[in-house]
Amino acid sequence: MAQIADVNREIEISDQVRRSRRSETERLTSIIRAIDELMFSLEELNLQGIDRVPARLRERAGALIELVLARPAPVEARSDPFRIRYRVVPMMDVLFEVQDRVLRLRNPIRITEDPEDQQESA
View 1 (tube, rainbow, N blue to C red):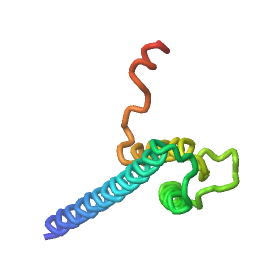
View 2: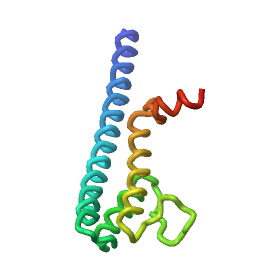
View 3: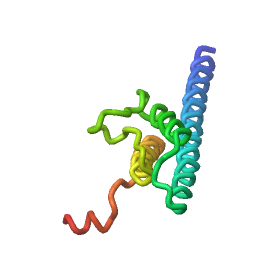
């Protein structure tokens, strides 16, 4: 009887781990989607020739950065690569970096370098 209880416990633990991983994957996917939507808005501004990021988009970017970094998004720290930017293209660059970090969290074995770069260094 103890064997059945042990097997049931293992099944429950395995199911909890699977649900936890699935939940985290869904959370990361929703963050990626939110970054994509924000990037689309910034790209629209860029195509219209607008070079300043409106406050509402900076706030959205800050919230996403905080969510990914698990710390407040820096505004004034000039050396921080994840700080909020006031110009469209630099803000897009920051969001690309944030999105890359999320993609790495979602898939840790993701290829991080271009295969051509690897061949050149060999």
